[in-house]
Amino acid sequence: MQDLEKIHYILGLEIDFLKDKAFICQSKYALSMLKKFNMLNCKSIETPMEQNVKDSNKGDERSFKDITLFRSLIGSLIWLTITRPDISFSVHKLSQAIQNPSIYHWKKAKRVLRYVSSTFDFGLLYKSEDLSIIGYSDSDFVGDRADRKSTSAYVIYLGGNLISWLSKKQDTVSLSSCEAEYKVLTTTTKEVLWIKRLLVELKIIMEENIHMIMCDNISAQALANNPIFHARSKHIEVAHHFVREKLIGGEIKLEHIDTSSCIADMLTKPLSKSSFNKHRANLGVIPRSMFKSI
Image (cartoon, rainbow, N blue to C red):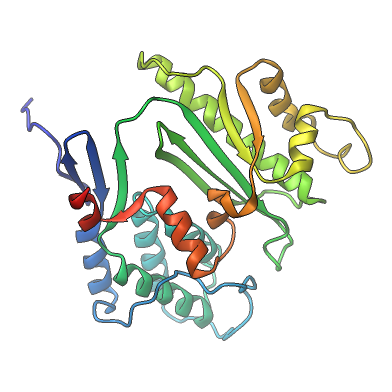
């Protein structure tokens, strides 16, 4: 074995260190991807998706002939999401068309590349803080107009640093926004507890034993605290009451948060430029130049 000292580059990931901070990005990989798809000198754009555009089946429905090229692009973008959670929702939506992409999907994929071209040196900032786990969960009720399924999203921080995130369509159709939010609460709780157990195995001592999960849906929070089987909730599977079990056990704590402050919101739907930039900064996604000036 050879000791190569501090890591600086591996599998396309570039790691910089500055005192008690670290910065991880994929700027070289992003530039090579733009060059591969002839978008190196494209016109840049400030958001990866247009706001208020949810219908993935509208637009130019003609089939995109080079399916291999489209799949190659989506695969490249998926690898970029390792350090770029700000494009996770866009890539998640485009991935759903990987079997039969249309020209519309190809244009939307190129829009993501135009966004990447203006933010190729962005990455994740990590800094040394008190260890505590906090999660944000959110869902976009019937966000997919094609099959009426909702989108789940969560972001989880350890000591103020983003370590886990998800943007995924739910497996089944939710009959209410409460049910959609409750489902993602279950997923978020599982991830928080998995991270906690991993830290215990690594013998890392945390400041708090009760971990906070932020949710912007009052109904879902009330259901977790008092699961009365009224008309709106009796159809929810018993498995989802895993959340209440952990609440009673004192392992997690739910707290309401305003929708405009819920960071996971950017992983469920396209946002305005101002909201997108605010949440992106809260995720810890910053340009490399900003890291060096901290």
